Structures are given as C-alpha cells and as structure tokens.
Length: 372
Image: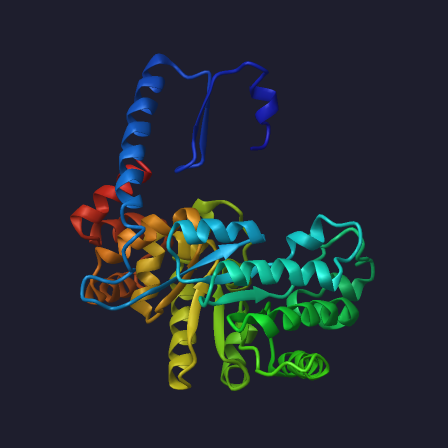
C-alpha cells in the first residue's frame, strides 16, 4: 500500500478487510460496527464453506471437476490435504532458489520433491521447473546481459542449462520412487524450445535409468503459444493455462498482483475467447487442460472456465472451499451460459453481470465473502 507509513503511525487502530483488499485507519464508531457485522457474516460463510471440504467437487448435474492445489513449498501440501484436494496442479519451485545464496543441491531439491509426492500418496504432483525473469531471479544468478534480460521461463532455463539440468535430475530421481510426479515447463512459446527441453529430460532420465516416462506438460501463457499449440500438444501429455501472464501479454497490460485487477483482466472477452480456443484445440487432440494461477481461485472465473470446457482447476488451497461450493451449486448448462455472457460483456460490468446470473444461494454466499 503505497504511502501507508505516511498515514499510519505505531499504535494506530486499523481495520483490514482481506476480501476486498481495503485498510481503514483510525475507523469511526460506525465503521467499527459495520466491520463487526461483515466479520461475523464472513465467519458464517467460511464455516459453511468448510463443511464442503469432505465432498467431491461435482456440478449439480454430476459432472466431475478435478480441483488441484497451487503450492510454493513442500509444507503447503498439508493445506492441500486439509482441503481434500485432488493433488498438486502447480508446484512453483522458485522459492527454494530465490531465498538461497547458492544453487540448491540435487539432494536438497530431490528431498523437497519427494516429500511433497509422498504426502500426496497416489495423487498427482505437478512440479513446474523454475521460472525466472529479470525482476525475479536468485542472487547467485547473474542476468546482466541484454539477451538474458529478455528471456523468461523455458527459454531462460535452456540458456542456464547447467542449473536446468540439475533440477531435471533432482525431479527424475524423485520420480523414480514416486510415479505420481509430473513435470511442467513454464512460458513455452514454441515447439522447438519444448523439443530441446524434452531431449534434455530424456537424456537425464536415461542417465538415471528411470524405468518409466515422467508425464510432461507445457504452460500456455502467451499468444505465441496459442498459435503454436497444435505442435506443442503433440509433444506433451497435458497443458496448463497461466491466466495472469496470458492476460499481460494478450492485453498489453502490466502484470498485476491485485486480486481485483487480475479478476478484471481475466474477464476481458478477448482473453476468454483465447482460452476457449486453447480448450478447443486441446480437445481435438484429446489433450487434458488445466487452468492454474490465481484466476482459477475466483469462483466467478471458475464458473466461466468450466463453461468454456475446462474440467481441471488448480487453485490456492485457502480458496478451495469457495470454489468447490460455487461449482457444486452450478449446473453445466448454467456454467456455459455464464461463459457465453462473459464473452459478450465489457470487463468493467462483467463481475456484476455474472454475479446476477448465478443461482441465488451461491450469489448470497459470494456477497457475504466480499460485501460492498
């Protein structure tokens, strides 16, 4: 919150509303009373939602939806298990690099991956290889050259082949004992770089004498990847859509960390139509598709994605109860109607329009979560 320290001083009374992302400094008595009502309503909604954790994620008409978890570190698997999720759809591995002064050893990496896989039993654990950029890279990795500053995701990993090969070897070693492990390559923009990464994985697997092939996926996060999708899906076992980056590169907007901005960007009709094209292209090749990232954690967007044909979502574990609740109160026909509506509605009006299209009971719970 820019300028916060100029407005608040030690000892200031503040009201923090995480559902709307607001902070009230030195609230009035009326604001305190209103906040107390909102907090009670929120706790009631959370109690109701948590009772859904033991139930399968199915639409009203019985369609099964696979609900996976996004995690940043091994201990986050406990949250996924707590909310009865179907596995790990996105294990972001950057944290163990970003907080280290030297590259993590293969033994250290493998230990983390194996713990996550063991904690999930037979459920899938999708390990995304490191996704660094000029503004997000570990202190031991120099990105000073102009060429390096232009690279992201898999392209950067292929340039840092020593570091990349070390991570692949750690994953392969864990996969030898845990066949539920899958690999996900980030920011794939063309089949040629994907082929290079797959050849490297094949070589490492042969060196480690891995008895089975590790399932491999590609993250679709750019318009370039959409145009290259027919060739990409021929080379992978599944694909994952990263909505935040896809919105940034499709809409020519700065990447946002604000939940409200992410939701608004993801509801741009052009982005929704792009995701529909991804789903249709993948369906023609019988390639599974998952939407991961924070957009999938929003119940309204989750309904849109299901209406577009998505059957697997990977969400923040803390948001799993509301997403599960929302989907269990929707039919496939209702989800398709919501998706069609989203493709014809301007982003500024999309949330209110789609909220009005939801069933009454679901609409009430969502309003309790984020009261105006």
